[in-house]
Length: 486
Image 1 (tube, one colour):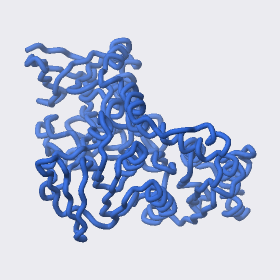
Image 2: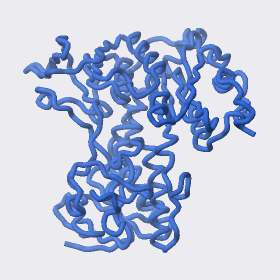
Image 3: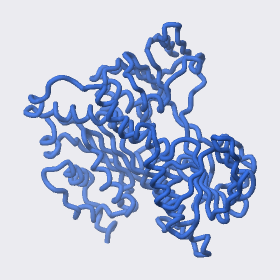
Image 4: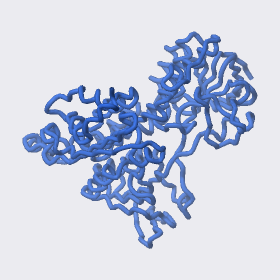
């Protein structure tokens, strides 16, 4: 057994762990990072990158077919083999050589194996070759182990060997029939992708399709999925699942409906990868989400930082905002926080402070790459009301904007903004329509900067672009009373 001492030890070399390590190294600290799978994590190999590659060809083809001149030049349909090959390239063919090279160039020490907290500031690493290494951290240990797909307790489901998001993202063939359990982002995106690739897709969603977004957005996506031939079974769930000897999966739903498929994908949420990281050594329960304070220090059962504050958790594992970009945002703040504390400097976790992850609560952006796309940031009308904010929600037909009509014949979309009527600032924005993802960052800036509604009137959208939707939403809302902005 060998022993090494570093300033910081990070468990998990996904994008979150990499960014924490990078920030700490740039601040002059030594860092070891531990990874049991591929360096680069879920996003690089089984989530963000390969799934968006699966979706992109179909989106481009739909865009071409929405323009008569361009459509005339298109013959045939998607080539699934070519789509899968391009997907493989974006997943680096499930090799992490490039990511490992980056770690080396950044001065970060990589240890392959399973990292487990064994004592204060101590991580034991069980290597794949059986070699054991003890890592001791002078300043901090960071848990950035992410999450895994959660498989619900449905009779027979586990024995049917279902796909999770990993199998869906990495499949080498397109099933003739695909049943999807779950109507969230993963289920919706994979229904979109596999329907375009030629699968007969059935989607089963107990809570409805995309239940956390504005209803005007989820309704447009539901209509589009049906138009693609996807069978939607909403507000019901599987009672039992069985794979027969021929490989066919049979599902019986709570409403009595029976279905058959070649593969079944489970997309019903995530569970934290904390079962094997040694949480019991700090008085916490293995397998639980990690609760953190404003500087991302892990909290004990008494609500105070573990030990003297040496243990941190960043990314999906702390359940604050489980998106890759938000995890990287947390990681950048955390890297600087650890450096500041190591040097005895103050840490500013006040709202929007240098070491705060305030956007996790106020301005989380997300794009759902469905057909049509949904882009959202901040509150929905429902969540704002639940937060006790006095708001006004305004909507506008995106298809009526000149830029949308030019973008595609028959363009269908809608946008809405949520305004805090007391502060006269934007606190939420949702838009649905073809190619709307790039509209999102303007709304993110407006919310994060708390730009007054009256000042937004001076941000003139170029004509004729999709961004003209901002003017139409402001006109629908109307100018705030003069007293509100003087």
